[in-house]
Image (cartoon, rainbow, N blue to C red; front, side):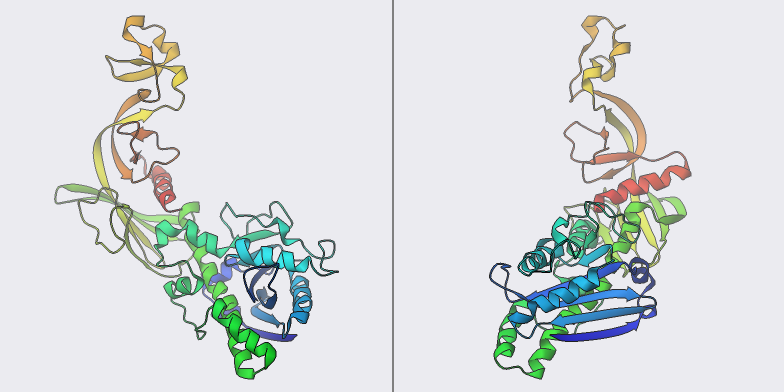
Length: 392
């Protein structure tokens, strides 16, 4: 087995990466000779972790299939006493592959080492405060996090190298895992230092790239409310009214995002303009601007329990049956999902999706949601959080 260890100061990483990297966290990536854990084997496992003020990367390389057990043993030794595992597409590939290969070797049982069989799809905001669930380990799959944020980031591709480029990171490695399988088999039969360098470089940069991808988690500040509102204003432009909200996140973002129009009909690059009905936002690294068109009119507030209401056709609204009992039977009807509403005149913003709590609509089958502008500034943050919910 070939063992390579490198380290560098954690202060060389941006603050948002340092925030999420804790000493109980292990990042790892595997290289295999194919996609089948039944037929193929692991030839390299790369790991990354924090130790005090240093970032460590360790690579365990099997020069032939007989050394697979040795590199798995080294990996499980690193995994002991850690609570969080970070991968890129590991919930689907790396973790089940490691679990199946480890099951072939005596001594690599769950009795002695943490069991990876209970990996699960993370459904809450990941990060250092995340509690373990379903097993002794918490699993953060950065590929799944990128998918979860697709509406916000508008990534051209969700391949690891593409996301790294999106974040402004560059690689020396120019190969993908499939291309390296042929190189590894050539190395098995005729070990060559240049081929070994190529194989190790790819895995090392996959691990190093995950430290950069951890920065994706900083955008969850928008969903979780880890920001402050620094300025509120209203303005009129060419007869249209807008609500402008400036925010400052707790942590910097990895990069600036261009103005994003959240209307699904508009391209990511189309400039925002006054006729846009849903608004847009711009996120710098340390600040953000949300610009929301203000609409005014009557909306319908639909109730979720029509069995408890009656509909009054002459008033075109529903009232609770405890009140409806006092209305003449000829002037009331049984409420249905379609007519169980009250009318509300308000100023509002619109969202291009139907949210779970989107009770305000124009019609029952409306595919949009409408949020009434709050009367008090202290309630604006809840409005913004519902707006950001579109992106996650």
